[in-house]
Length: 119
Image 1 (tube, rainbow, N blue to C red):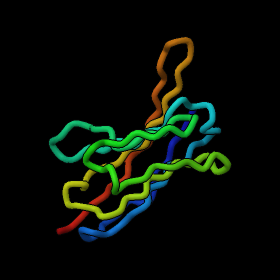
Image 2: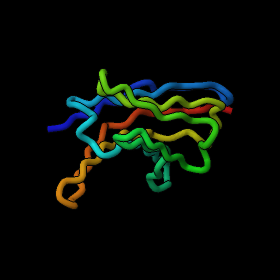
Image 3: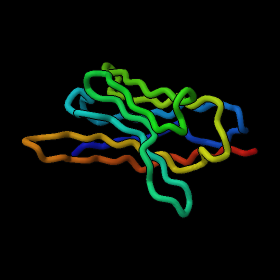
Image 4: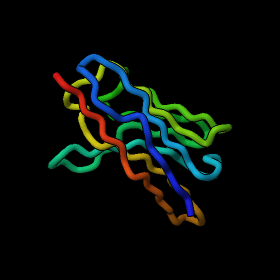
C-alpha cells in the first residue's frame, strides 16, 4: 500500500514563501507522475503542478513563475516551492501519485496540508 505524507503547510503573509514536501513510502520512480493539487473552500480540486518520472513539469497558469515542483528520487520525496504567495493560494494542498499499468490508472493521495496566506 502506497502512503504519501505531505508536510510544510502553514500560515504565511502575502508575498512570503513556503515549501511543501510529499514523502512516499516507496520509490517514486515507480510512478508515472507526481502531482500537487489544491482545494479551496467551496471550490473544486485543481491541479497546481506535476512532474513526470522523466522530469517533465507542468504548471497551472495561476502559479507559473511563482511555484516550482521538483523531486528527490533518493529521498522518495516531491517538493513544491511556493514563492510570492497570494491570498488566493489559500487551500488544502494534496499530493497525488499516479501509476499507469496496462492502460489502467492508479491514483494515490496524501492527507493534505493546509496553506493559509494572509493579506
